[in-house]
Length: 291
Ligand SMILES: Cc1cc2nc3c(=O)[nH]c(=O)nc-3n(C[C@H](O)[C@H](O)[C@H](O)COP(=O)(O)OP(=O)(O)OC[C@H]3O[C@@H](n4cnc5c(N)ncnc54)[C@H](O)[C@@H]3O)c2cc1C
Image (cartoon, rainbow, N blue to C red; front, top):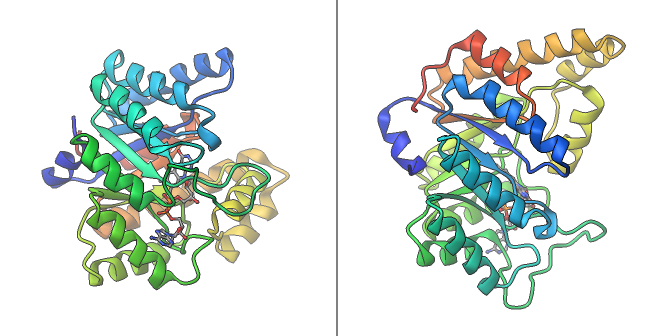
């Protein structure tokens, strides 16, 4: 059930990310989405952890249900925000005792209204500390986050990659990247990481553009950029949502084809709890993947 074993099979992984919905209706829709994505045989799926630990129980319950009832290999995201080490320890114990073997260890963003991340007293200042603690607590497969265009709060990319190397040294088994739209950014990031001795698999995080305004909002929050030519093209289509969808899917398919031709270790789709775009892209590519 460990994700790191999949990387040894010689095929890229294919994975989908979900977030815990706020309402019962949202959960019903999410289970429908998972049903529609299941036939693609994902290598694994992951469930995000809300800001400030707001979805703590929902994340744990959802990841357990997906793995234990729907029989899909699952990974729980976990952040340091608002938690002491003891609280994190008890979440890790719950996950471990439910058979979850994969955790994406993150620092998390500052809670709404705060611009700087402040460690909780008795908690962790960054994800490296969380990775070290998680590694010591149970024998989890631990994923960590990487930033092809640099983390927004980091002063420079070399420093950012040094911090990434530290997460891996502390026990990170693989990396999933922040979303990006220019594969050149990913290749530069991967080459530099390799040259700095970071040898673990690096999975590309992708989010197809289905709505220009929504994607601009995401991009501004996470420090990524939409290439100008793509943005101009999509803005020209904005009056026609179907045309934006078609262009977004076409771009994502080309991005995936190029990544697969360049030996990417895996592709991780930020699904936003919707299945159509991911299904359309995966069916067009028919990606042979580790499952
Ligand atoms: C694949 C993926 C999934 C995500 N899932 C979630 C989620 O479920 N929930 C959520 O709230 N957020 C999620 N995020 C967002 C993430 O929490 C934010 O990007 C957050 O700002 C940084 O998290 P991190 O784990 O990369 O932090 P860190 O690795 O701790 O890095 C944060 C910043 O601190 C710097 N830093 C790291 N170590 C040190 C050190 N030792 N000394 C000084 N500076 C240091 C880094 O360079 C960086 O600028 C996800 C991001 C990705 C890429």
